[in-house]
Image 1 (spheres, rainbow over the protein chains, first blue to last red):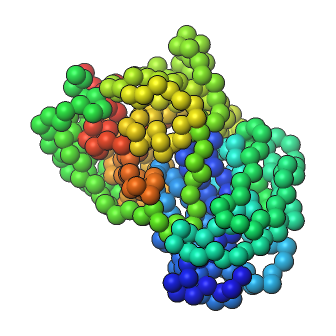
Image 2: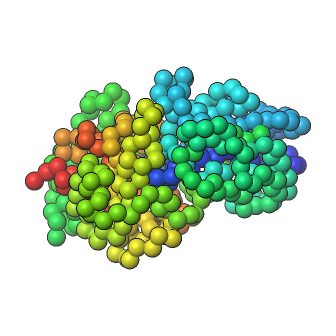
Image 3: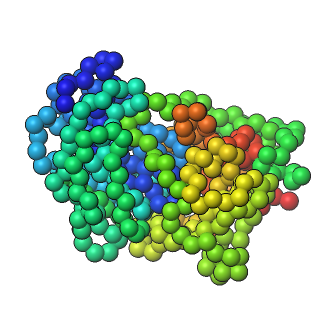
Length: 177
Length: 216
């Protein structure tokens, strides 16, 4: 992707997103370049900045104090688990990057009937960023049982975002590399 | 017309500002059973629709659960025997048993009620339903999703209000579409159940509706 510049919008890739099955809340976990979102600063350089955004009780928030990923980095893993969060000593959605816990976020539900990966998008004002994203491994896990592969493994290269519906509920964990 | 029901005409009332019920978080407390006519919101900022990285997808809002008749619902969810005075017809009622917010391995079932002037359409999206004036009431077995839970998550965007003897967190949501509609979310727990009321309506009427089952 060309490095974004001021006025050039943003390129956003969120390999992992959970959507509450019973509320309209969500959490996104991924990387971006270019113009930031409210709460996430602009990122005009050759590294992707890791971010998390969410909605709970109708309030959008974005945070990006998790580090960066080089343009040529490979085998990056993004994972969201609903489990005990050691940072706050409560149950929360826990955000892992390459196996390291980076943050915990609350939303109004603990399960999702839809997990998203392979999404890539530019905010409405941004030009097409011509992204090509490959996902080598996309898995989810329910409240019982181990990780299973998604029914579709993603290569995505177009706006609008690419969604995968998983048949069923009680999805507690998703993991994307 | 109900005295406190949602969309009811606003009567005379005074919101009393009281501080200190919860550490550093309270700015406006309405009398627990009075009729609120205005809410002094703590933080009137919001995030515009444009420029966010992610959005909740436009999908049918009721994706899980069972539509139950009243008798079966009572047996499955006795905690849902609570009837705030919403001045719109109840169009759908779903029983859902998927969430385990407190992480104890036992799901807390929920009942989600949809009130609207229009007939129920299961394909309606959340945005369409709320923007058209629909009201959503979510009642679940207690699992810690109370006013403090919301305030911890959204900070000053939550204004504490009294819901009868209970504490509620009132949030003026960010726009739910590019058209800029901003509904209110009111979350509270009465110890027997956790509740959330969502409506594109004046803050005071949302609060009054929530108070209705607790006040004569």
